[in-house]
Length: 71
Picture 1 (cartoon, rainbow, N blue to C red):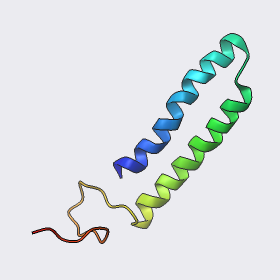
Picture 2 (picture 1 turned 30 degrees about the horizontal axis):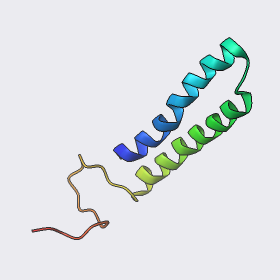
Picture 3 (picture 1 turned 45 degrees about the horizontal axis):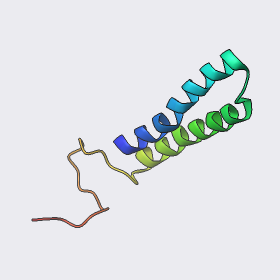
Picture 4 (picture 1 turned 30 degrees about the vertical axis):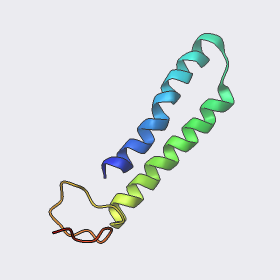
């Protein structure tokens, strides 16, 4: 779950910085639109991963089928 939450942050942080550049200098408009779409897509994808059960949280006390049991 933590990885799914990290993905939008990795794209959203450059978006915030490039929005500041766009306001000051008037450039990077196409780049910002790409980052907006990518950030939103990663939010939806991360929500799908966690809510569908593909990824389980490290804080959940359940069995995960993604790796074999280690003794």
